[in-house]
Length: 431
Length: 179
Image (cartoon, rainbow over all chains, first blue to last red; front, side, top):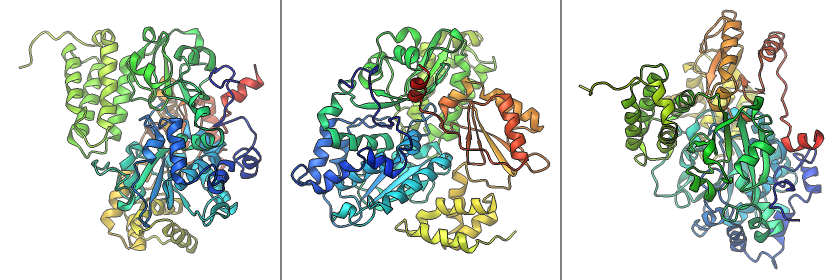
Protein backbone atom coordinates (compact mmCIF):
# COMPACT_ATOMS: atom_id res chain seq x y z
CA UNK A 1 0.00 0.00 0.00
CA UNK A 2 1.26 3.46 -0.82
CA UNK A 3 2.26 5.49 2.20
CA UNK A 4 1.80 8.64 0.13
CA UNK A 5 -1.95 9.01 0.45
CA UNK A 6 -2.32 10.76 3.78
CA UNK A 7 -5.83 9.46 4.33
CA UNK A 8 -4.64 5.86 4.52
CA UNK A 9 -1.18 6.62 5.95
CA UNK A 10 -0.02 4.55 8.92
CA UNK A 11 2.20 6.45 11.39
CA UNK A 12 5.75 5.16 11.80
CA UNK A 13 7.38 7.84 14.00
CA UNK A 14 4.71 7.85 16.69
CA UNK A 15 2.58 4.80 15.86
CA UNK A 16 -0.38 4.17 18.16
CA UNK A 17 1.21 1.32 20.14
CA UNK A 18 0.58 1.27 23.88
CA UNK A 19 3.66 1.74 26.09
CA UNK A 20 5.99 2.04 23.12
CA UNK A 21 8.26 4.16 25.31
CA UNK A 22 9.23 0.98 27.16
CA UNK A 23 12.24 -0.70 25.63
CA UNK A 24 10.73 -4.20 25.73
CA UNK A 25 7.66 -3.04 23.81
CA UNK A 26 9.82 -1.13 21.37
CA UNK A 27 11.96 -4.21 20.72
CA UNK A 28 8.89 -6.40 20.20
CA UNK A 29 7.88 -3.96 17.46
CA UNK A 30 11.15 -4.57 15.65
CA UNK A 31 13.01 -1.85 17.51
CA UNK A 32 16.83 -1.83 17.49
CA UNK A 33 16.83 -4.30 14.57
CA UNK A 34 18.09 -1.53 12.28
CA UNK A 35 20.98 -0.86 14.65
CA UNK A 36 21.70 -4.58 14.84
CA UNK A 37 21.75 -4.81 11.06
CA UNK A 38 24.13 -1.85 10.75
CA UNK A 39 26.52 -3.20 13.37
CA UNK A 40 26.53 -6.87 12.46
CA UNK A 41 25.39 -7.40 8.84
CA UNK A 42 28.70 -6.76 7.07
CA UNK A 43 27.28 -7.94 3.74
CA UNK A 44 24.61 -5.25 3.76
CA UNK A 45 26.66 -2.54 5.52
CA UNK A 46 30.29 -2.90 4.56
CA UNK A 47 31.47 0.20 6.40
CA UNK A 48 30.14 3.35 8.11
CA UNK A 49 30.20 5.18 4.78
CA UNK A 50 27.61 2.78 3.33
CA UNK A 51 25.22 3.95 6.08
CA UNK A 52 25.90 7.61 5.28
CA UNK A 53 25.23 6.91 1.58
CA UNK A 54 21.89 5.22 2.32
CA UNK A 55 20.75 8.11 4.53
CA UNK A 56 21.92 10.60 1.93
CA UNK A 57 19.94 8.76 -0.78
CA UNK A 58 16.79 8.84 1.37
CA UNK A 59 16.95 12.65 1.33
CA UNK A 60 15.83 13.22 4.92
CA UNK A 61 15.53 17.00 4.91
CA UNK A 62 16.37 18.33 8.38
CA UNK A 63 13.19 18.62 10.45
CA UNK A 64 14.48 21.42 12.67
CA UNK A 65 13.58 24.03 10.07
CA UNK A 66 16.54 24.42 7.73
CA UNK A 67 15.60 21.41 5.58
CA UNK A 68 19.17 20.36 4.76
CA UNK A 69 19.79 16.76 3.58
CA UNK A 70 20.86 14.92 6.75
CA UNK A 71 23.08 12.36 5.04
CA UNK A 72 24.88 15.09 3.13
CA UNK A 73 25.51 16.89 6.41
CA UNK A 74 26.94 13.67 7.86
CA UNK A 75 29.34 13.40 4.92
CA UNK A 76 30.91 16.75 5.90
CA UNK A 77 32.58 15.17 8.94
CA UNK A 78 36.36 14.96 8.46
CA UNK A 79 38.02 11.53 8.65
CA UNK A 80 38.38 10.15 12.19
CA UNK A 81 41.73 10.89 13.82
CA UNK A 82 41.32 8.91 17.02
CA UNK A 83 40.18 11.93 19.07
CA UNK A 84 36.67 12.58 20.37
CA UNK A 85 33.88 13.32 17.85
CA UNK A 86 30.42 14.44 18.82
CA UNK A 87 26.81 14.23 17.76
CA UNK A 88 24.68 17.02 19.26
CA UNK A 89 20.96 16.31 19.04
CA UNK A 90 18.83 19.41 18.98
CA UNK A 91 15.72 19.04 21.12
CA UNK A 92 15.51 22.70 22.01
CA UNK A 93 12.22 23.14 20.11
CA UNK A 94 11.47 26.71 21.15
CA UNK A 95 10.04 28.32 18.03
CA UNK A 96 6.47 29.44 18.82
CA UNK A 97 4.04 27.03 17.16
CA UNK A 98 6.44 24.07 17.42
CA UNK A 99 5.73 21.19 19.79
CA UNK A 100 6.54 18.02 17.89
CA UNK A 101 9.80 16.56 19.25
CA UNK A 102 8.26 16.22 22.71
CA UNK A 103 5.97 13.58 21.18
CA UNK A 104 9.02 11.49 20.36
CA UNK A 105 10.47 11.96 23.87
CA UNK A 106 7.16 10.89 25.36
CA UNK A 107 5.92 8.16 23.01
CA UNK A 108 8.87 6.76 21.09
CA UNK A 109 12.19 7.75 22.71
CA UNK A 110 13.96 4.56 21.65
CA UNK A 111 13.34 5.26 17.97
CA UNK A 112 15.33 8.45 18.45
CA UNK A 113 18.04 6.73 20.51
CA UNK A 114 18.38 4.02 17.86
CA UNK A 115 18.66 6.66 15.14
CA UNK A 116 21.27 8.61 17.09
CA UNK A 117 23.38 5.48 17.70
CA UNK A 118 23.21 4.57 13.99
CA UNK A 119 24.28 8.14 13.17
CA UNK A 120 27.11 7.81 15.68
CA UNK A 121 28.29 4.61 14.02
CA UNK A 122 28.06 6.16 10.55
CA UNK A 123 30.17 9.17 11.58
CA UNK A 124 32.43 7.38 14.07
CA UNK A 125 31.10 9.52 16.91
CA UNK A 126 32.32 8.91 20.46
CA UNK A 127 29.73 10.81 22.53
CA UNK A 128 26.17 11.89 21.81
CA UNK A 129 24.74 14.92 23.61
CA UNK A 130 20.97 15.31 23.59
CA UNK A 131 20.11 18.91 24.35
CA UNK A 132 16.52 19.42 25.47
CA UNK A 133 14.98 22.75 26.43
CA UNK A 134 14.77 23.16 30.21
CA UNK A 135 11.02 23.81 30.10
CA UNK A 136 10.56 20.20 28.98
CA UNK A 137 11.50 18.89 32.43
CA UNK A 138 8.91 16.10 32.38
CA UNK A 139 10.12 15.00 28.94
CA UNK A 140 13.78 15.31 29.96
CA UNK A 141 13.11 12.87 32.77
CA UNK A 142 11.39 10.48 30.36
CA UNK A 143 14.37 10.72 28.02
CA UNK A 144 16.85 10.09 30.85
CA UNK A 145 14.92 6.97 31.83
CA UNK A 146 14.93 5.74 28.22
CA UNK A 147 18.70 6.33 27.97
CA UNK A 148 19.25 4.33 31.19
CA UNK A 149 17.17 1.49 29.78
CA UNK A 150 19.13 1.56 26.54
CA UNK A 151 22.39 1.30 28.52
CA UNK A 152 20.99 -1.62 30.55
CA UNK A 153 20.03 -3.41 27.32
CA UNK A 154 23.42 -2.91 25.73
CA UNK A 155 22.25 -0.42 23.10
CA UNK A 156 24.51 2.31 24.48
CA UNK A 157 27.92 2.19 26.16
CA UNK A 158 30.72 -0.23 25.45
CA UNK A 159 30.55 -2.85 22.66
CA UNK A 160 26.99 -2.22 21.59
CA UNK A 161 25.18 -5.43 20.65
CA UNK A 162 28.50 -7.25 21.17
CA UNK A 163 30.09 -5.37 18.28
CA UNK A 164 33.29 -3.39 18.71
CA UNK A 165 31.40 -0.13 18.44
CA UNK A 166 30.98 1.99 21.60
CA UNK A 167 29.24 5.30 22.16
CA UNK A 168 27.89 7.22 25.16
CA UNK A 169 24.76 9.34 25.33
CA UNK A 170 24.24 12.27 27.71
CA UNK A 171 21.00 14.18 28.14
CA UNK A 172 21.72 17.87 28.77
CA UNK A 173 19.02 20.19 30.03
CA UNK A 174 18.76 23.76 28.80
CA UNK A 175 17.43 26.43 31.13
CA UNK A 176 15.16 28.71 29.14
CA UNK A 177 16.64 30.46 26.10
CA UNK A 178 15.13 30.32 22.60
CA UNK A 179 18.50 31.17 21.08
CA UNK A 180 19.91 27.82 22.22
CA UNK A 181 17.95 26.19 19.38
CA UNK A 182 20.44 27.87 17.04
CA UNK A 183 23.01 25.14 16.47
CA UNK A 184 26.19 26.90 17.57
CA UNK A 185 24.43 28.57 20.50
CA UNK A 186 23.38 25.08 21.56
CA UNK A 187 27.03 23.98 21.45
CA UNK A 188 27.96 26.89 23.73
CA UNK A 189 25.16 25.91 26.10
CA UNK A 190 26.27 22.26 26.17
CA UNK A 191 29.75 23.58 27.02
CA UNK A 192 28.17 25.29 30.04
CA UNK A 193 28.21 28.88 28.81
CA UNK A 194 25.86 31.69 27.87
CA UNK A 195 24.19 30.74 24.61
CA UNK A 196 25.92 33.12 22.22
CA UNK A 197 25.93 31.85 18.62
CA UNK A 198 29.37 31.35 17.06
CA UNK A 199 30.71 32.89 13.89
CA UNK A 200 30.77 30.40 11.00
CA UNK A 201 33.16 29.29 9.55
CA UNK A 202 34.59 27.24 11.11
CA UNK A 203 31.53 25.03 10.80
CA UNK A 204 30.71 22.53 13.55
CA UNK A 205 31.86 19.60 11.41
CA UNK A 206 35.36 21.09 11.65
CA UNK A 207 35.22 22.75 15.07
CA UNK A 208 32.16 21.97 17.16
CA UNK A 209 31.97 20.91 20.79
CA UNK A 210 35.30 21.60 22.53
CA UNK A 211 36.83 22.37 19.15
CA UNK A 212 36.21 18.84 17.87
CA UNK A 213 34.23 17.62 14.82
CA UNK A 214 30.53 17.74 15.65
CA UNK A 215 27.32 17.09 13.73
CA UNK A 216 24.05 18.63 14.82
CA UNK A 217 20.73 17.03 13.92
CA UNK A 218 17.16 17.58 14.99
CA UNK A 219 15.39 14.92 17.09
CA UNK A 220 12.78 14.09 14.44
CA UNK A 221 15.46 13.92 11.74
CA UNK A 222 17.41 11.30 13.70
CA UNK A 223 14.19 9.41 14.43
CA UNK A 224 13.74 8.91 10.68
CA UNK A 225 17.10 7.12 10.42
CA UNK A 226 16.12 3.65 11.76
CA UNK A 227 13.15 3.69 9.36
CA UNK A 228 15.46 4.37 6.42
CA UNK A 229 17.82 1.57 7.49
CA UNK A 230 14.94 -0.87 8.07
CA UNK A 231 12.95 -0.11 4.91
CA UNK A 232 15.49 1.39 2.54
CA UNK A 233 16.10 4.82 1.10
CA UNK A 234 13.66 4.18 -1.76
CA UNK A 235 10.82 3.44 0.64
CA UNK A 236 11.50 6.65 2.55
CA UNK A 237 11.84 8.89 -0.48
CA UNK A 238 8.63 7.50 -1.99
CA UNK A 239 6.58 8.90 0.92
CA UNK A 240 4.97 12.29 0.51
CA UNK A 241 6.40 15.23 -1.42
CA UNK A 242 9.07 14.35 -3.97
CA UNK A 243 11.66 16.95 -2.95
CA UNK A 244 10.93 16.83 0.76
CA UNK A 245 9.98 13.21 1.38
CA UNK A 246 9.15 11.12 4.39
CA UNK A 247 6.89 11.08 7.39
CA UNK A 248 6.40 14.45 9.01
CA UNK A 249 5.12 15.57 12.41
CA UNK A 250 2.69 18.42 11.89
CA UNK A 251 1.98 20.50 14.97
CA UNK A 252 -1.29 22.30 14.45
CA UNK A 253 -2.41 24.99 16.86
CA UNK A 254 -4.64 28.04 17.00
CA UNK A 255 -8.28 28.33 16.01
CA UNK A 256 -9.01 24.74 14.94
CA UNK A 257 -11.28 22.14 16.52
CA UNK A 258 -8.65 19.45 17.01
CA UNK A 259 -5.23 21.02 17.55
CA UNK A 260 -2.34 18.64 18.20
CA UNK A 261 0.57 16.80 16.62
CA UNK A 262 -0.29 14.61 13.62
CA UNK A 263 2.08 12.29 11.83
CA UNK A 264 1.37 12.22 8.10
CA UNK A 265 3.38 12.14 4.88
CA UNK A 266 5.02 15.41 3.94
CA UNK A 267 3.15 17.49 1.40
CA UNK A 268 -0.40 17.33 2.77
CA UNK A 269 -2.49 20.17 1.29
CA UNK A 270 -2.77 22.99 3.84
CA UNK A 271 -6.54 23.30 3.54
CA UNK A 272 -7.09 19.54 3.94
CA UNK A 273 -4.83 19.63 6.99
CA UNK A 274 -7.02 22.29 8.55
CA UNK A 275 -10.41 20.95 7.45
CA UNK A 276 -10.01 17.20 7.70
CA UNK A 277 -7.09 16.51 10.00
CA UNK A 278 -7.53 19.30 12.54
CA UNK A 279 -11.32 19.16 12.39
CA UNK A 280 -11.92 22.53 10.72
CA UNK A 281 -12.17 26.01 12.14
CA UNK A 282 -13.43 26.55 15.67
CA UNK A 283 -17.00 27.88 16.04
CA UNK A 284 -17.58 27.71 12.28
CA UNK A 285 -15.45 30.81 11.69
CA UNK A 286 -13.73 31.56 8.41
CA UNK A 287 -9.99 31.06 7.94
CA UNK A 288 -8.03 34.30 7.85
CA UNK A 289 -4.37 33.26 7.71
CA UNK A 290 -1.80 30.66 8.67
CA UNK A 291 1.78 30.72 9.81
CA UNK A 292 2.98 27.43 8.30
CA UNK A 293 6.11 26.42 10.20
CA UNK A 294 6.79 28.33 13.40
CA UNK A 295 6.50 32.04 14.10
CA UNK A 296 9.43 33.09 11.91
CA UNK A 297 7.96 31.71 8.70
CA UNK A 298 6.06 34.29 6.63
CA UNK A 299 2.31 34.46 7.20
CA UNK A 300 -0.01 33.40 4.35
CA UNK A 301 -3.50 34.83 3.83
CA UNK A 302 -6.36 32.37 3.28
CA UNK A 303 -6.56 33.46 -0.39
CA UNK A 304 -2.92 32.42 -0.88
CA UNK A 305 -3.53 28.82 0.14
CA UNK A 306 -5.30 27.24 -2.85
CA UNK A 307 -3.40 24.10 -3.84
CA UNK A 308 -0.53 24.81 -1.42
CA UNK A 309 0.96 21.70 0.16
CA UNK A 310 3.13 21.32 3.27
CA UNK A 311 6.55 20.90 1.71
CA UNK A 312 9.42 23.26 1.04
CA UNK A 313 8.86 23.70 -2.72
CA UNK A 314 5.15 24.42 -2.57
CA UNK A 315 5.44 26.77 0.41
CA UNK A 316 8.34 28.64 -1.16
CA UNK A 317 6.28 29.20 -4.31
CA UNK A 318 3.42 30.42 -2.13
CA UNK A 319 5.78 32.88 -0.42
CA UNK A 320 6.66 31.16 2.84
CA UNK A 321 8.63 28.23 4.26
CA UNK A 322 8.02 24.83 5.81
CA UNK A 323 10.18 25.58 8.86
CA UNK A 324 9.34 23.15 11.64
CA UNK A 325 5.90 22.31 10.16
CA UNK A 326 4.30 23.77 13.29
CA UNK A 327 1.28 25.48 11.75
CA UNK A 328 -0.60 28.25 13.53
CA UNK A 329 -4.13 28.79 12.26
CA UNK A 330 -5.98 32.10 12.66
CA UNK A 331 -9.67 32.78 12.15
CA UNK A 332 -11.41 35.86 10.74
CA UNK A 333 -11.66 37.56 14.16
CA UNK A 334 -7.90 37.57 14.67
CA UNK A 335 -6.34 40.99 15.20
CA UNK A 336 -3.27 40.78 13.00
CA UNK A 337 -1.67 43.87 14.60
CA UNK A 338 -1.83 42.23 18.04
CA UNK A 339 -0.41 38.99 16.66
CA UNK A 340 2.55 40.70 15.03
CA UNK A 341 3.26 42.78 18.13
CA UNK A 342 3.29 39.59 20.23
CA UNK A 343 5.66 37.85 17.82
CA UNK A 344 7.97 40.87 17.90
CA UNK A 345 7.85 40.91 21.68
CA UNK A 346 9.00 37.30 21.64
CA UNK A 347 12.03 37.95 19.42
CA UNK A 348 13.00 41.05 21.38
CA UNK A 349 12.87 39.02 24.59
CA UNK A 350 14.92 36.21 23.07
CA UNK A 351 17.62 38.16 21.22
CA UNK A 352 20.90 37.19 22.92
CA UNK A 353 22.23 40.73 22.55
CA UNK A 354 25.46 39.82 20.82
CA UNK A 355 24.88 41.67 17.51
CA UNK A 356 23.68 45.27 17.40
CA UNK A 357 21.29 44.96 14.41
CA UNK A 358 19.40 42.24 16.29
CA UNK A 359 19.65 43.54 19.86
CA UNK A 360 18.50 47.03 18.86
CA UNK A 361 16.45 46.05 15.82
CA UNK A 362 14.17 43.64 17.67
CA UNK A 363 13.62 46.35 20.30
CA UNK A 364 12.69 48.95 17.71
CA UNK A 365 10.33 46.55 15.94
CA UNK A 366 8.52 45.85 19.18
CA UNK A 367 8.40 49.52 20.25
CA UNK A 368 7.03 50.78 16.93
CA UNK A 369 4.47 47.96 16.80
CA UNK A 370 3.42 48.78 20.36
CA UNK A 371 2.90 52.38 19.33
CA UNK A 372 0.74 51.28 16.36
CA UNK A 373 -1.18 48.79 18.48
CA UNK A 374 -1.92 51.55 21.02
CA UNK A 375 -3.35 53.74 18.24
CA UNK A 376 -0.49 56.23 18.28
CA UNK A 377 1.21 55.06 15.08
CA UNK A 378 1.34 56.98 11.83
CA UNK A 379 1.26 55.36 8.40
CA UNK A 380 4.91 56.22 7.81
CA UNK A 381 5.79 54.03 10.82
CA UNK A 382 4.93 51.05 8.63
CA UNK A 383 7.65 52.02 6.18
CA UNK A 384 9.98 52.65 9.10
CA UNK A 385 9.31 49.08 10.26
CA UNK A 386 10.13 47.73 6.80
CA UNK A 387 13.29 49.81 6.78
CA UNK A 388 14.36 48.40 10.16
CA UNK A 389 13.87 44.83 8.88
CA UNK A 390 16.18 45.64 5.95
CA UNK A 391 18.79 46.85 8.43
CA UNK A 392 18.56 43.55 10.30
CA UNK A 393 18.34 40.80 7.68
CA UNK A 394 21.62 39.08 6.93
CA UNK A 395 23.66 41.41 9.11
CA UNK A 396 24.12 39.26 12.19
CA UNK A 397 26.01 36.17 13.35
CA UNK A 398 22.95 33.93 13.46
CA UNK A 399 19.49 33.85 11.91
CA UNK A 400 17.53 35.22 14.87
CA UNK A 401 17.51 38.69 13.34
CA UNK A 402 16.08 37.26 10.12
CA UNK A 403 13.55 35.23 12.09
CA UNK A 404 12.44 38.44 13.81
CA UNK A 405 12.43 40.51 10.63
CA UNK A 406 10.50 38.19 8.29
CA UNK A 407 7.22 38.14 10.22
CA UNK A 408 7.26 41.95 10.33
CA UNK A 409 8.11 42.34 6.65
CA UNK A 410 5.57 39.81 5.38
CA UNK A 411 2.74 40.50 7.81
CA UNK A 412 2.81 44.22 6.99
CA UNK A 413 3.10 43.54 3.26
CA UNK A 414 0.26 41.02 3.27
CA UNK A 415 -2.08 42.84 5.68
CA UNK A 416 -1.11 46.44 4.94
CA UNK A 417 -4.74 47.65 5.03
CA UNK A 418 -5.25 46.38 8.58
CA UNK A 419 -2.12 48.10 9.79
CA UNK A 420 -3.03 51.34 8.02
CA UNK A 421 -6.48 51.22 9.60
CA UNK A 422 -4.79 51.32 13.02
CA UNK A 423 -2.51 54.23 12.06
CA UNK A 424 -3.09 57.95 11.84
CA UNK A 425 -2.31 59.47 8.45
CA UNK A 426 1.14 61.00 8.28
CA UNK A 427 0.29 64.67 7.63
CA UNK A 428 3.67 66.30 7.87
CA UNK A 429 7.22 65.39 7.13
CA UNK A 430 9.52 64.44 9.98
CA UNK A 431 11.40 67.47 11.27
CA UNK B 1 22.77 33.47 53.71
CA UNK B 2 25.14 30.52 53.45
CA UNK B 3 24.02 27.43 51.63
CA UNK B 4 25.47 23.96 51.53
CA UNK B 5 24.95 21.02 49.21
CA UNK B 6 23.92 17.74 50.79
CA UNK B 7 25.93 14.54 50.31
CA UNK B 8 23.30 13.43 47.79
CA UNK B 9 23.71 16.64 45.79
CA UNK B 10 27.48 16.28 45.76
CA UNK B 11 27.16 12.71 44.49
CA UNK B 12 24.86 13.95 41.75
CA UNK B 13 27.37 16.64 40.84
CA UNK B 14 30.18 14.07 40.69
CA UNK B 15 28.19 11.88 38.31
CA UNK B 16 27.38 14.91 36.12
CA UNK B 17 31.10 15.74 35.94
CA UNK B 18 31.72 12.30 34.44
CA UNK B 19 29.40 13.13 31.55
CA UNK B 20 31.49 16.03 30.24
CA UNK B 21 35.15 16.39 29.26
CA UNK B 22 35.59 19.51 31.39
CA UNK B 23 34.07 20.93 34.58
CA UNK B 24 32.92 24.20 33.03
CA UNK B 25 30.40 22.29 30.90
CA UNK B 26 28.54 21.14 34.01
CA UNK B 27 27.56 24.73 34.95
CA UNK B 28 23.98 24.60 33.65
CA UNK B 29 23.33 21.15 35.06
CA UNK B 30 24.78 21.99 38.49
CA UNK B 31 22.75 25.21 38.64
CA UNK B 32 19.72 22.93 38.21
CA UNK B 33 20.90 20.73 41.09
CA UNK B 34 21.23 23.88 43.19
CA UNK B 35 17.83 25.24 42.21
CA UNK B 36 16.20 21.87 42.95
CA UNK B 37 17.76 22.00 46.42
CA UNK B 38 17.35 25.64 47.43
CA UNK B 39 14.42 26.74 45.25
CA UNK B 40 16.43 29.49 43.59
CA UNK B 41 19.96 30.43 42.58
CA UNK B 42 20.48 33.86 44.14
CA UNK B 43 23.94 35.44 44.43
CA UNK B 44 24.84 33.29 47.46
CA UNK B 45 23.82 30.04 45.73
CA UNK B 46 25.75 31.11 42.62
CA UNK B 47 28.84 31.57 44.83
CA UNK B 48 28.31 28.08 46.27
CA UNK B 49 28.12 26.60 42.75
CA UNK B 50 31.27 28.47 41.72
CA UNK B 51 33.14 27.29 44.82
CA UNK B 52 31.95 23.69 44.41
CA UNK B 53 33.02 23.55 40.76
CA UNK B 54 36.12 25.71 41.33
CA UNK B 55 35.00 28.07 38.59
CA UNK B 56 35.06 31.90 38.58
CA UNK B 57 31.97 33.42 40.22
CA UNK B 58 31.63 35.71 37.21
CA UNK B 59 31.21 32.70 34.91
CA UNK B 60 28.49 31.14 37.04
CA UNK B 61 26.72 34.47 37.40
CA UNK B 62 26.99 35.03 33.65
CA UNK B 63 25.32 31.70 32.96
CA UNK B 64 22.65 32.03 35.67
CA UNK B 65 21.68 35.48 34.39
CA UNK B 66 21.45 34.39 30.75
CA UNK B 67 18.82 31.67 31.22
CA UNK B 68 15.30 32.61 32.26
CA UNK B 69 14.43 29.44 34.17
CA UNK B 70 16.95 30.04 36.93
CA UNK B 71 15.31 32.07 39.69
CA UNK B 72 17.75 34.78 40.67
CA UNK B 73 15.79 35.51 43.84
CA UNK B 74 13.58 33.66 46.29
CA UNK B 75 10.24 32.82 44.68
CA UNK B 76 6.87 31.70 45.98
CA UNK B 77 6.40 28.03 46.85
CA UNK B 78 4.73 27.51 43.48
CA UNK B 79 5.72 29.49 40.40
CA UNK B 80 2.98 29.74 37.80
CA UNK B 81 4.42 30.41 34.34
CA UNK B 82 1.55 31.44 32.08
CA UNK B 83 2.32 31.28 28.37
CA UNK B 84 0.95 34.21 26.36
CA UNK B 85 3.00 33.63 23.22
CA UNK B 86 1.51 33.24 19.73
CA UNK B 87 -0.80 30.19 19.96
CA UNK B 88 -1.65 30.85 23.60
CA UNK B 89 -2.36 34.50 22.77
CA UNK B 90 -4.78 33.33 20.04
CA UNK B 91 -6.49 30.89 22.40
CA UNK B 92 -6.94 33.14 25.44
CA UNK B 93 -3.63 33.04 27.32
CA UNK B 94 -4.00 36.67 28.38
CA UNK B 95 -7.48 35.92 29.79
CA UNK B 96 -5.93 33.18 31.92
CA UNK B 97 -3.18 35.56 33.08
CA UNK B 98 -5.74 38.25 33.96
CA UNK B 99 -7.84 35.71 35.81
CA UNK B 100 -4.84 34.61 37.87
CA UNK B 101 -3.86 38.22 38.58
CA UNK B 102 -7.35 38.90 39.93
CA UNK B 103 -7.61 35.63 41.81
CA UNK B 104 -4.20 35.99 43.49
CA UNK B 105 -4.35 39.76 43.92
CA UNK B 106 -0.92 40.24 42.34
CA UNK B 107 0.47 41.27 38.96
CA UNK B 108 2.65 39.10 36.74
CA UNK B 109 6.17 39.23 38.15
CA UNK B 110 4.97 39.37 41.78
CA UNK B 111 4.61 36.91 44.66
CA UNK B 112 1.62 36.60 47.00
CA UNK B 113 2.15 37.91 50.55
CA UNK B 114 1.83 34.42 52.05
CA UNK B 115 4.70 33.29 49.80
CA UNK B 116 2.51 30.61 48.22
CA UNK B 117 2.43 31.72 44.57
CA UNK B 118 4.63 33.64 42.16
CA UNK B 119 3.05 34.57 38.84
CA UNK B 120 5.03 35.05 35.64
CA UNK B 121 4.16 35.72 32.03
CA UNK B 122 6.45 33.60 29.86
CA UNK B 123 7.35 32.96 26.25
CA UNK B 124 6.42 29.86 24.24
CA UNK B 125 6.68 26.67 26.31
CA UNK B 126 6.12 24.24 23.44
CA UNK B 127 2.54 23.21 24.15
CA UNK B 128 0.95 25.22 21.34
CA UNK B 129 -1.71 22.65 20.49
CA UNK B 130 -2.89 22.54 24.10
CA UNK B 131 -3.27 26.29 24.55
CA UNK B 132 -3.86 28.12 26.77
CA UNK B 133 -1.51 26.53 29.25
CA UNK B 134 0.82 27.15 32.16
CA UNK B 135 3.76 25.42 33.78
CA UNK B 136 4.07 24.87 37.53
CA UNK B 137 7.54 25.67 38.96
CA UNK B 138 9.53 24.51 35.93
CA UNK B 139 7.72 21.16 36.20
CA UNK B 140 4.43 19.84 34.92
CA UNK B 141 2.43 21.49 32.15
CA UNK B 142 -1.25 22.17 32.79
CA UNK B 143 -3.00 22.32 29.43
CA UNK B 144 -6.30 23.45 27.87
CA UNK B 145 -6.88 25.96 30.67
CA UNK B 146 -10.24 27.41 31.60
CA UNK B 147 -10.96 29.66 34.58
CA UNK B 148 -12.47 26.65 36.37
CA UNK B 149 -9.41 24.53 35.71
CA UNK B 150 -7.16 27.31 37.01
CA UNK B 151 -9.22 27.64 40.22
CA UNK B 152 -9.10 23.89 40.71
CA UNK B 153 -5.32 23.92 40.23
CA UNK B 154 -4.87 26.66 42.84
CA UNK B 155 -6.93 24.66 45.35
CA UNK B 156 -4.89 21.54 44.69
CA UNK B 157 -1.58 23.35 45.10
CA UNK B 158 -2.79 25.00 48.32
CA UNK B 159 -3.68 21.52 49.62
CA UNK B 160 -0.15 20.35 48.96
CA UNK B 161 -1.04 18.18 45.96
CA UNK B 162 1.26 18.18 42.94
CA UNK B 163 -0.21 18.54 39.47
CA UNK B 164 -0.29 15.24 37.58
CA UNK B 165 1.43 14.66 34.28
CA UNK B 166 -1.17 15.17 31.58
CA UNK B 167 -0.63 12.67 28.78
CA UNK B 168 -1.71 14.51 25.68
CA UNK B 169 -3.33 11.78 23.60
CA UNK B 170 -2.00 11.31 20.14
CA UNK B 171 -4.75 12.89 18.05
CA UNK B 172 -4.77 10.06 15.50
CA UNK B 173 -5.61 7.58 18.20
CA UNK B 174 -8.38 9.82 19.43
CA UNK B 175 -9.79 9.92 15.92
CA UNK B 176 -9.73 6.15 15.73
CA UNK B 177 -11.64 5.80 18.98
CA UNK B 178 -14.29 8.37 18.10
CA UNK B 179 -14.70 8.24 14.35
